[in-house]
Image 1: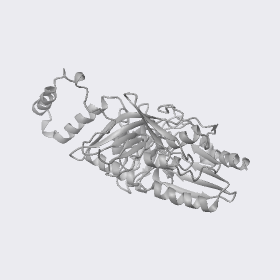
Image 2: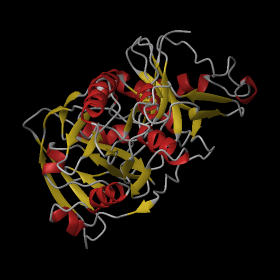
Image 3: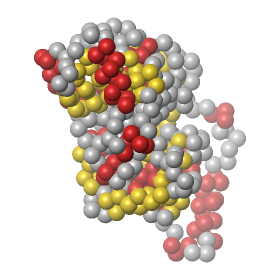
Image 4: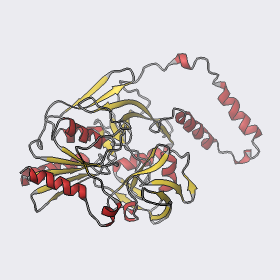
Length: 416
């Protein structure tokens, strides 16, 4: 089997940049590590190779009675009889038909990406792109902000996790896929995009005008507080995460903090390897996450056995923007009692996609499995409930207050 990455993501950094819906997926860049993103979980194999868990034979019984010649007949009919046939774009028609085929499955995480979208998706995973700096998702058939990234244009303009995008530059988002919304939102730095937003507490939708910029995201930040606690912020599980996390762990070991706050709020997910490796610093042995396939088979991902942080009292901050890979980490620490989970219920992205490169540079990702926490719980569509529920209100946000972080500090210092 070819090398691949597994990723689970929940939202698209599309809004931010291009096409990157962090959920769970295998992303194939001929890299040997598995990965996962919150929002979408998928497997990227590339070159048409199959996942070891994929069916070797498509279900021929369901298609043997279909007349595939109808496609050619309709193609010819449109080219011959459409009133504006001189304006027809064959490439656009062809890709449109592929989008329709994939969309017929009614699964928001199973999507077709044309070559440009595939290129943008790969750029998003690398952590550098042009856009507004926010992940989006199609939740309950509404394009929704999953997570505005720290210090990026979307956050500076006032967008928040959970905001519903009703229109983009005046065009309704009704019926749009996540990828479609991304195409409308992203664009060159210095240009503007207007999003019409509905938010809990708003009497009516409001317009937000955002100036696009260059988005460069370092996924891990470490802060050592004067009270003896450390705050480890992981904003995504991307290409740079494990390197930056390793450096953070070394600093933590050197400074020996009284307690550790792991902040996974608004983290849409990323590489599965990173989620497993990071969980392993608190979980020294045993299962971290399990994939369950349609035939009932299971694949376990066990701890790497490091456990360098397992003896440091830990609080994990989560919210509705915490998805996929971040739910794997928080779910493992919750089930195995390695940390106190504080904040709000997570997004609930627990499916895995297989992403495959196609010969023309396009790609398709297909949901192939769901993942389970160590206790066997599926969080897909339900999310993870924190041990201590603390909400962040609009008033808190406007006053730069953080009651969730405050509670984490209180819990950890009380343990000493």
